[in-house]
Image (cartoon, rainbow, N blue to C red; front, side, top):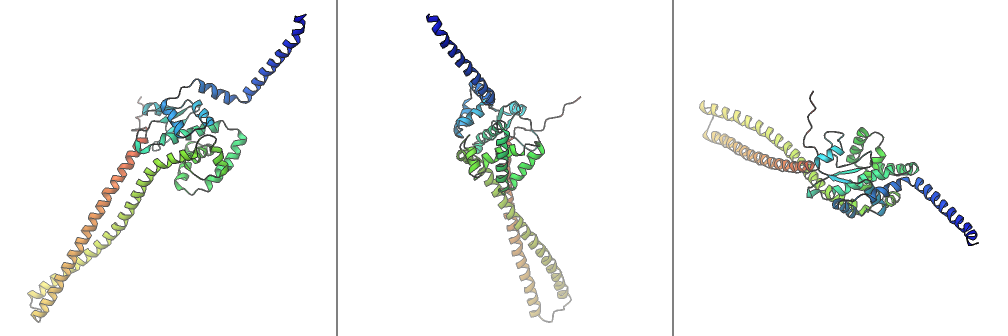
Length: 333
């Protein structure tokens, strides 16, 4: 009798479990990427450096899930070059997001560029997030990103985007999505709210501005020195031409004076002494002018030495972010 009464209850439990299994299956299908990301994260042990990136950029739970799901690696030169092949010889890359859903970041040890790895990591994480974004959401973001891009007056940004047009056709908005999100403030409430789902915009922009200011200061100094050299060079050339012409004329006048003195052409000693004093005064004035020009040349050379020093500092910074030390030799037959 008791067995007879328990069967309906067992059937109900069975039906509930079956329905639950079906519901979970449907949910898993509809959220396939989330499930895959969770599985990837559960089997991934982030290094201390990777965890530090997450902390310094204040990745949200959603941002960290995407970042860790790509199993990010911070690699030294050889491993990074193998994972992230360069598109153009003179265009170093700091990180890449690969077709197999991996993120690789170049290990940059130059302390002047502290923060560059973190910003690069968020940049690449946004590529991974773009891949996970629905077509409908991409359409909305495209409109917002292009509007923000068109409102930014930045020649260097346009140059970078032209590079991506050449090297990654069809990925313009994808790249814009990463660049604007990590480097440019005041994108409008919609985009600010969107990026805030994944990381702290304030912290990432601060990191970007910190290392970018190192470059900006050097470029500003180089531009100032270049302007000074250009202006001083023009002044030196102009004064040198005037000095050369005046010296040539003085030489001719001295020769004439000496000839007339030899021929007894002067009517009196007063006339002789007056003309001679005039020539001496002109010679002294030219000596002073020569000293001024030489001083300007010394100043120009000082500016040039400073300019070369700034250029060497820029080269050192560029060298520290360039994973290639030289162009590899082509294989021989």
